[in-house]
Image (cartoon, rainbow, N blue to C red; front, side, top):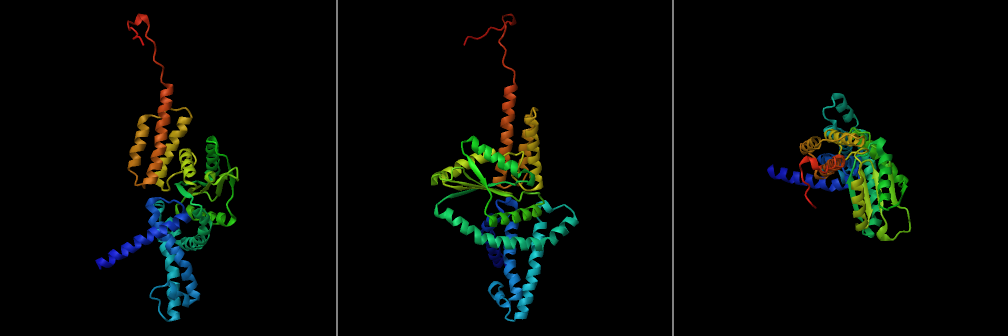
Length: 348
């Protein structure tokens, strides 16, 4: 039994990592504390479609259901059972995610009831992503482009502000871009993604998707790039040198006043406090050192993944830096001692 458990856990972890790569293509960069649950949701949703087909074509079940009985009627009922059980497990998994806890029995029952819609939408869209994304990305692979991704969570009412801010920051560094809509198929897939993410994480996330490319369409290969922004992900594609440069620009351009870098309630409340400090400072108020120190201490109490922790710490650092700059600018200039003061100036 211990050996069986060891093997089972090993297989589960391997599947989690493999399907984690697939779900990252679909979901974008997700919170590290929830990636196992999202991977499970992706696996089950992807498996639900062939199980659904097997209900009507029992012979198909022998290819997808291990130990399926030879009897077609029994096989059909097995497929029916799995088609019912899978959405229930999906609903339970979603209900166990951090943002869904402690919201009351009614909310839990709602998430359980949404198990079937989640399974259907994710299953269909992930199947299409598995087919479409490799076709789209093969051109990037053959051109040996780098792909770099940033963890973001773009609220529905902040998408346009985020996009405009990105364009402005790139222009400030001499990089002019055009903003285009993605291909209709890709856009539809990611609008469905926004719908799913918003309900899984109890967030009003953007369902838009835009692509930024160089304004000069005839640029050389070394200067070509593509930046994609959607609710859960900011992706930069291009040669390594320009991707690294764009990454540095966009990381510094992430505006905590319009987007979030984490997904759960507790960490977003901390981001809200950073946002409030930024807004008060912009309004002319002084931010005390003790306030930023408290933010750092509270960040240490959050069980964030390394990328999320670094992103939030960077926001606090920027608040610290800018508040110190304001404090230094407002400090009174040292006065020259007068002759009557009894202080003799030291010759320079």
